[in-house]
Image 1 (cartoon, rainbow, N blue to C red):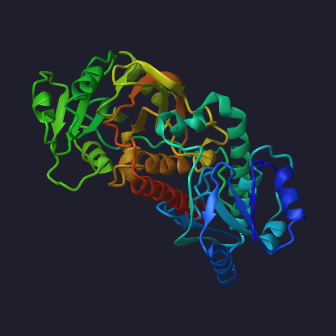
Image 2 (image 1 turned 90 degrees about the vertical axis):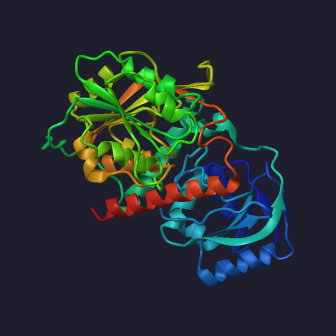
Image 3 (image 1 turned 45 degrees about the vertical axis):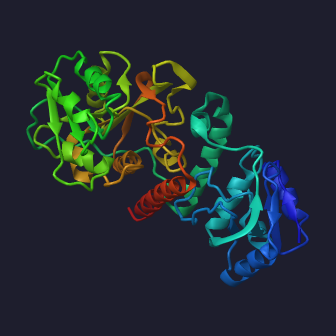
Length: 424
């Protein structure tokens, strides 16, 4: 057996590969990541494919484990590693959308997954070195880089067709946002979860308190047991609009801290996100967000942000506006991408019905998927937020084990959401 190293992933290239295949199993490799097959790689992958009836098989590399495939693993950037195998008969039977320039293999994978298992072998069957390493902020935001717009539109079309075939696609018809049944002390609350951010917390809080609005608002900081000077700095702020919550529990993630704020009697009718190392772009951001929330009315509004360094200088790719979102298909395409943007703002009454999962990664994505299943999400596409990228970021230079855990969790969230949409 041998590996076909495939650079061209168009419909035409994939169709030609399947047409000329002369074996029942095809091994496909990434030419940018040549591998050294282990002594039984071909036999082991073939054996598992035949015994499980899988349509697609992949395995771990030496020192590079992957994650299991789920029904929610529909993102086009799912990492199968530098080599995988497909069952030729399953691939031929699945078909492929003609005319795809980049998404032929992606389309084939989704179609195979609808009828056959996609199976990971948690064994190191090969070793490899990459000449095209990933990582860093620029790569993290490739999917929202305007230069990749045509590519992303094609991938969205492929993913949307898959959701239609499995019955998980949602038409652009939304429920009305329910009227609040409770009184709120202020119209809006800025929510800032924080732990050990003595270098940035004052910038964030002052950015929030500097907002100019025609309504009452407060700033709720949930200090998750900081051990640095963060509590002391917060106590030094002499502003009655600041609410400092110290949770009684020591097992809260970022999502749990959000719950402390939104279920607090201090929370306003609308709650608006501000991370502890970020800032609002100007003094009218809160006013504008609330204005958009009420114009829908929307259950949630998501803005756009500019990536900056610690000194607030813009860094590539600059503006992240998530223009892949559309009213017609945004909540379907949200299942393909890894995030929706920032800052995020919510109707508190709606949010209290859902709550945040008690995790520190993907908690915002989980809530956005859940909100979008029923309600329309409003968008602001020009930059209203400065997102700092620095060594203190929670997603900075992640070890592989942590990155895999995060990716697996987001795929699990998609799995749950897809099942809920099918069963709605």
